[in-house]
Figure 1: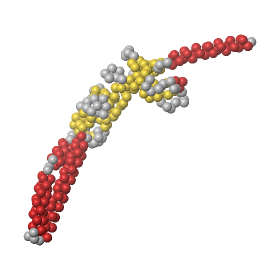
Figure 2: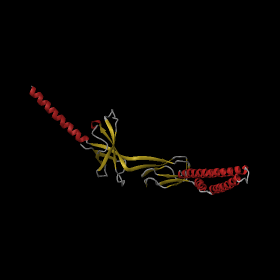
Figure 3: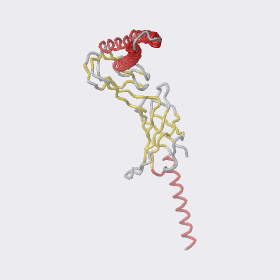
Figure 4: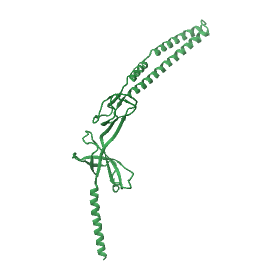
Length: 271
């Protein structure tokens, strides 16, 4: 009897190991979804009349490309005036000449005063005139600094009338057309396709076996036939108790945009 129970126990263990191995082999390949790494909605930073929108749905854009402009004649004129003011040097040069003259006058008056040729009042007036000329030069330089700050503000306001793409990607939707008056409304929706993100839901039994930096194989659904290598970037630290799963994010390079986002896929993790 004892021998029979031992035999049955060994057989049960063997069957259990076989089932576990089969489940492990099947669980090594999981469903996944390929998504853009970023989806950005660009809004106009200021209100105004939309003058141009240079892209439309499906167009590729590079980071920094101009995608829209607002009517900016007033802002351009303001920047031009501020630029002229920032380069004006007449007040500084005039004050410097008055300082030079004041110093020469003070030296002559001081010499004459020491020789008894002029009263103290004239010496005091010469010194005061020199000090006022120095203050006038300081004021002129401060006004020039203020004009340069005004130029920077005017150029910043003008720059807000030009909208540039914050990412490289594809235009998903254009929400405004030229001629519309916008009050900081959404303009475009962009998707970054390089790299792509691959989202995978994995069973809790794989906890501790998947780590950032791990390389895995990703096979998109037809019509794509190729197998790509992706890298684990994020492993969720919170388990979904109801399903006994957690999420893993992979990063899939896509420099030539050969892989469209939105495809289902299969991912194979290393044993």
